[in-house]
Amino acid sequence: MYLYVLTAIFLFIMQSLSGASSLFFDCQLRERLDIMSGINRKAYGDHSIDAKGKAYGDSDDKVLLQRIVAGFTYHLNEKVVFSFHLYDARAWGWSLDQDDFVKNRGTDDEFVMDPYEEYLELFNGYIQVKDLFFNGLSVKIGRQKIWYGDRRIFGPGGWGNAIGWLWDAVKFSYKKRENFVDVWYGQTREKDPNSFSLLHKHVYQGVGFYSHFVLSGYGFLEPFFAWKNSLFHDIKPEEDTYYFGARFYNNDFYHLNWDITYVSKLGTIGDKTVRAYAYVLKLGYRFEKLFGSPNIVIGRVFASGDSDPSDGVIKTFTKPFGSTCGIHYGRMDIINWSNLVDNQINLYLTPSKRVNFKFAFHNFNLDKAEDKWGFYGYRNKDGFNYKHLGNEYDFQFIWKFSKRIKFSVIYAYFDAGDFVTHNVDNNDAQHIFLQFEYKFSLNLKLK
Image (cartoon, rainbow, N blue to C red):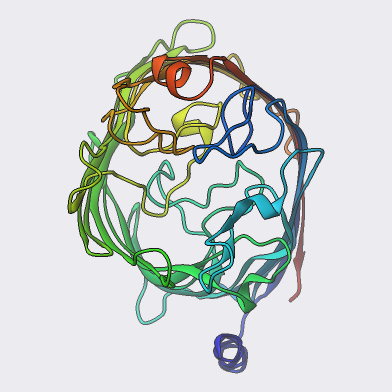
């Protein structure tokens, strides 16, 4: 039915509208080597023991990742756009495989969320009509990525190779100058390398609202809302949660820059009530006249935990449909926005338009010692009450060699805190990324 509706809409548009058309082909290739020491995607520690006590893979994983996104965008005229792209994500050399990422194994609720691999998957396939009933209103129907702002609330999450939140959705957008309001309903798919997602399970359905308003001279305000509902729940309790919040930021106010986000999470999971919250506070100053225009940013990223997981109220915050990429929570990629206190300081340097550096320090702690480490799921052992996950030191170098080619080198070192050394494993960890990106495009005017 989904494909029939898209086809009918497309044929109707083709017959009823005319104008100058163009065809845009593009392709993106990303090759990356991940070198890990003391961790893998399932477990922390030299012994690779996960939160349930099972050994998973090698703690010194070295993974070669490849991702290709290719397709076309067809502009029928100034108002009608059709876009279709496939992507292919593969991994070689790692000690894990897709079977290690099966959820609800052996049940009707079974699905796969492989972070590295998807074979010839639909990246996007949508029809967009602009100025639908009046100027500024548009609709987009089909497979699409939906992301805004810093991608913390809504974002596809593509750093891990297999792209995270992709939506099969209907989205309405209204834009007037720099201001916009978007609202949509859609469903998100699983990440199973061996199944085509349009023909397989969807994991969540949801409604999203995101807006952007210019506060003249003072920055930008972005109120948002999300409804998140699990689509199958024979084994796991049904999630029916609501997120309310806003982001306020300014990238340059007399060399000051700030980023403030607050979000409240309400609803139910099974028979339990949800009351959780999270926030981001960042303040920086850019020294424009110094070499590299250094921008020093201090901040705190917080997500509530639950001091009594056994009662009838869930106070642990988990993200709505946002990215967990390391750009937010340290480049080790072992932290997410849940039961978290992240005190941080960042230094950004831009010596040229093509080269930039970033140095960062993160002091990671649990909000509640009784709750789990969000990423891996480890908890304090009986009698322990530790909170300090560890201190992380990050270095990032990005070189835009040309319009088509970009190189990235990232190094992260994790100095394990007392929560890790007493409950998980007594080792520090490292993560190195060596990445190459190539983009190609071709624009054809048809008439």
